[in-house]
Amino acid sequence: MTMRNRRLYSGDSPEAVQRDLLPLVDFQGIGRPLAEVERLIESSLLPHLMQYDQVGFQSMYNSIPEPGATLGARVALAHNQGVTNWQVSPGGATLEELCCESLCRLFQLSDRAGATFMYSGTYANQQALYLALHKRAELDGFNFGEEGISGFRDPSRLAILTSEDAHFSIDQSVRMLGLGEQSMIHLKVNANRQIDPGQLQRTLEELNGSKDVFCIVATAGTTSTGTIDPIGTLSEVAQQCGAWLHVDGAYGLSFSLLPEYQPRFHGIADADSITWDPHKQLGVPIPNSLLFLNDEQDFARMTLNSQYFNRASSHEPNPGLKSPPSTRPMSALPLVTSLLHQGMNEVMEKLRVPLVSIQQLAEHLATQDDFESWHEPETGILCFQHQPDHIADLDRNDLQTYIYESILSEGRRSISITQLDDAVVLRILVMSSRIEFADLLETIDDIRSSARNFGSKP
Image (cartoon, rainbow, N blue to C red):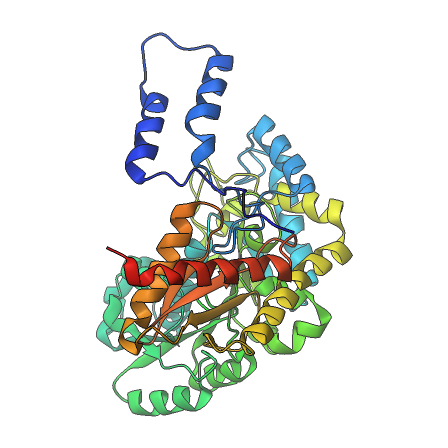
């Protein structure tokens, strides 16, 4: 299968894209017919949108909605339901609650577990840390929702431990919670980019007496490499030191649906909270994220009642009591219709495709003298460097950046770069089940071709 002549997007510069889009924001007193607006969108905007369904898209966590999800999204848009509570949508509120219950069973969480839909994984991570802080405050004898950070005798002692490869939304969360980045302690990772339990234990011993570790954040599928932290071991450590364990499974949790992958997620049912983004692998529209709690009663720490909305006397389904947004889209419907349409067997088969193709790529690069992989792939991501003999060691980071920019500018395929320690590395992510090993080999050919021009760059 060759995609060499298919463009993912126009390839135009930011300046050119902006010029094309200006007519779309030229608001006039007299409106235009819908047919004219549609033609304007087709000519001005669509050429610059990234085509996630093309096999050359191998860089980010995006996908085109699958048919079942499209049906649900179309119904949700047509009825524009807020699903905060029974008052605004009896069907929407009830469907979200039922969907969350079914998902808890699907992921084999405890009978006490519960979930809520969120606007993004970032907000799910933020709420999880808030709940962890709230629980810590209760142990110290006060209500965090009422007293806030000032309720702690010495807020500067509060600390969160996580991997140096954890998503930046964890850092954003401590900013939003008023803790500041000084509360974040990033743990060094092992050779395969996982939290090292020994390093974690040593860090806890070093912090004993000077810091109060109230939360440990594990990642099930890190952003850069897709690595899964040793959740079971981290859960045991968290229980021993009285910390809340949060698992950011925004990317990787889906793979726990595969029976052969479940051992890699050992202990996840013991986590206090888990983030998941179905919009990544499952092909459902954004926004579609969830926060799972091991004990659904912990959502009560988010509850706020009012006189006209979310009344305390109401006993009907009320998802709005579990998280801040008082306007909530019907995100559950596209996920429900997608899973109904595909069936879990097909979902699992699609999840296996990235795992197989990335493993094949890793095995292939191991036989190539001009490539070096930087980790053993655990999910659908592989990071590596292209290292041709004629490029000096000092230029290799610059070479990876040059290859990335060169390939992106051509518009025929999309890869990404990231930094692991001091190395800039190329990164391939397989999201679509349409991407085969042959498509990845074409990307490797393009990488080699781009590198040949490195010496002649201006």
